[in-house]
Image 1 (cartoon, rainbow, N blue to C red):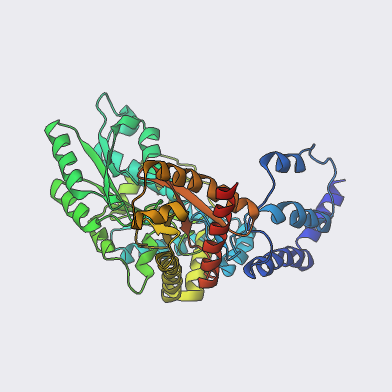
Image 2 (cartoon, helix red, strand yellow):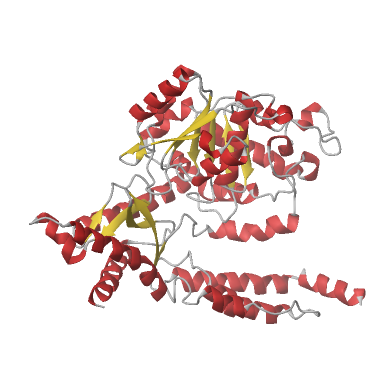
Amino acid sequence: MIDDILAELEADASLEVGKQFAAVTARYFESTRAGKGQVSTPCSAEELAQRFAGEFPRDGRPVAEILARLEGDVIADANKYYHPMYMGHQTSAPLPVGVWMESVIGALNQSLAVWEMSPTATMIEQQIVGGLAKLAGYGAGAGGTLTSGGTEANFTAMLAARNAAVPNAWEDGLGADPPVVVYGEHAHYAVTRAIGQLGMGRRRGIPIPSRDYRIDVDLLTAALDRLRNEGKQVMAVVASAGTTATGSFDDLEAVGKLCEERGIWLHVDGAHGASALLSSKPPRALNGLRYSRSLAWDPHKMMLLPLAAGMVLTRDEGDLERAFAQQAPYLFHAGKSTRIVDQGIRSFQCSRRADVLKLWFAMQRFGTSGLGQLYDHLCNTARILHDAIEERGDFENLHEPESNILCFRYLGAKGRKKAGSGITSSDVEQIDALNRELRPRYNRDGTGWITATVLGGRPVLRVTMMNPRTSAVHVKALLDGLAAKAKEIESA
């Protein structure tokens, strides 16, 4: 029997089988990028669970037969990020070369913990991390590592900040009076999750209210003054370069100066917005990165790579190594010259794919200029949506887009009253209810897909432009489709 299995294994390694997989991917590219079919699935979770129910097969089946089911049962009802009417979460329509590189990465199966296990990919990661750290304004001693995404990147940075604040925490714990972390109210949930996971206690996180969806620097200053007067140790201040809700950039210059004056670790969550460093006109806020001690950056967002490709950078690479100070002689046994490039000494992950290779390929293929143009294009598409809303009377913008994210509300006939006789509290409640129901009803139809959030206690519609194929035509279709669906709800 094993001879039969080995024969099938060798057959699966053939170019012919590879072409079958590539054909499935190419057909997906072709159908979705042309805007055909549904953006998501009309099926319920229960229906999909039933589709994939059943025992594991005892005997294997032909590749072609399984691929046919893959297309019919899996891809058909998956979210189609390549579809130009997908304007949902911060998951990209990935660069095709990044997709094709996934098979090469899987075939090589390098593990980037130790140089001897991944000699070429490790050196590429060193080169790319160093280059992007330089782009962020960090000096020669900077470094970092790729991560699974922004959550791990932020957690890693918080661990390094904790080690700097409480150097003996690894061995002795945090004690009875842990330090605190200060962050903006619109920070990603990964920040508060890290505070809890690091054993500090969720209440050791101090949220700062925002002004225009950015951290209020005056309130931040007051909070730091109060904490100092109370004798509290501040482990870090976390600022956002591209908040999840609105894509807003905190005033990193002002926040950074404040942290520098007080000797506080500044971490910038740039998972979404750090890619603006590639833009021809990066936001002025990014000038403040020079004050930061660590930075989270997700190339799988605005650099349009397939999941997963996150990254954490530190001004002093030693901060990361000290945060993971642990002996593992069965791995890290090489000489000093080799050990310094082992990624395992500055990373949570030991078994880690060589995701840096798809980042390297994308940068070779398009250059920093080309990737920057794609970033600018996505941001401009959000601006097109903003301007289209300004020309209509049935929607309102909640903010100016600073990146590729825009939040807005459907107002309908009741909303138009505000320009005349005023709008009542009852009208506001009805508008809230309408916006709450509009997004799931619109998405269920399959003609488009958006997200939602809550700003100022009110439900709002939210769009994230992550597909370079989305154009003004699709923006108009989105607003027309939302308005039509809203009228159906209003007339029901």
